[in-house]
Image (tube, rainbow, N blue to C red; front, side, top):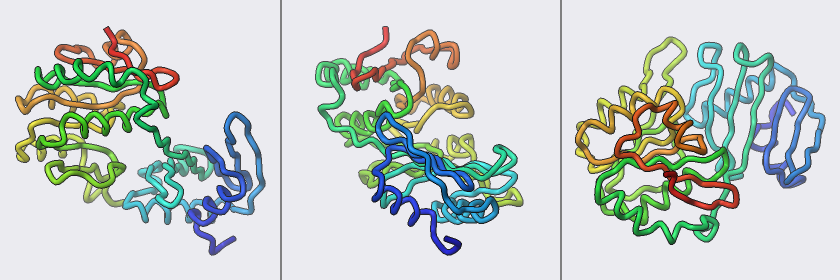
Length: 265
């Protein structure tokens, strides 16, 4: 298995088991199959797995080393997203693979009823946060809303990694970079924000608000370049406001269980 690429191992494992999620550590592979779990043994050694994970991360134009011990990206052959970790952030090399959920338009119950409301939000240039749990379809719905309402606008997208696919010519994607091992080449969210102001955007999109993106979200809301669209983990206004502070001129669209959409009031 020494010469086997991780992507080959993942493809072969998926062909055999059709997993929804995979957790890989030295000697052990855990698969989530719908609601059940299956444990398999593997022959990956610690240093070997660390090297293979680093090769996969580098192929995604990301960085993984002791000073930046976690990274994420995609495996296009499987339409999966991965999160990779090495010490010191974990006690051993580990990679988690999750299949992208391909939501259909019909999955988002209540979306059609929100058409006039969403149109009004964009006409007033209010900001929009799409919230929900992991895998709820936040990014998918964000892309759908952008294509349905904003396809003709000049949009600048700021994100941590590339998962947007083909974009309309009017849209520009700016990506963070963690730089090299020696610290050169780092491009932060604040760097992207400063550069984005030169691009004459009618509207901004922030891929997801986690932690460091909160400052950029508030900066983007106050530059006079139209509204901001983003996604965020959360399920009620109280939690969102506790993390963000002011929600002035900001509407929150929640994706609940069964992919039901509703505006939080």
